[in-house]
Figure 1: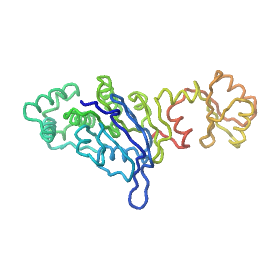
Figure 2: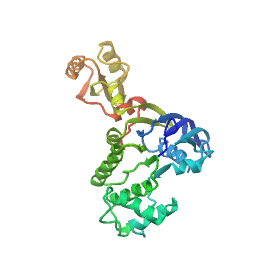
Figure 3: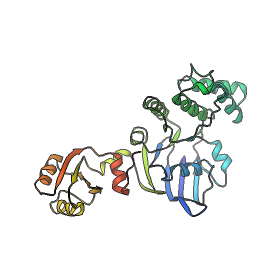
Figure 4: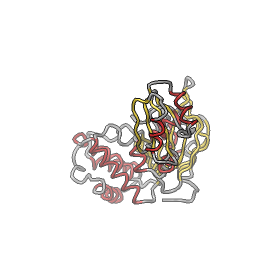
Length: 316
């Protein structure tokens, strides 16, 4: 892998507007250092897949600039493709071929000779748990096995940057866990840069060094999962109200219980607690006569971060 450039991925004011004026990506900026696992986190339609499409040269940017492994994706698309690999949401392996034949064809497309292809295939089959099925038709694979084959196929070319676009969508819980464990193994091996898109909170927290939260084509927050959660305080008091939420917020702020970071979701108010035990905040709230019908405390999640920033739920 070559590392004679400052970042594995560099995005500057990147925009994509589709015909009809649909703005999918609205001027985003981020940089991913070598060896980092970087997450684009947001619901379907946020602009994550369009961003990956531009970075992998399958979608032409409207404006702005993006570089992958130092290569501009618009002016040097072939070089950018040669330095990277992508696993899209939709499967691309040929279900009529065996797993091995799929890998052999991909290796040939990347210019590997027979010996080189055999060596690379041997290097990915066992670590990806494909040894028992590699010579079977892909049509007989489970969803998790096909997904592992897709990632193994992407790694045949030994990319500097690997793009994983919603890699666990549609998998049952067991196969999803297995695939997350596999991706975590790639992360632990180091060296390769991974950009992961997801709308699953646990994936972002488990796998990513940093996360960009994407909302309606814009990045609304970017930091490590731990840092994003730290802004929410140690605990979150959640109360359901039978009354006007804005009046309750004003009362809580006047009493010093809630700060500017309190936010409402319908009739439920969420109050980050920073400098006192949650039980003290709950006791104060209970004494104010705000028409509280239910109250509890819990640790904050990335969904809370997203709700606070956008007013929309992140979880699918």
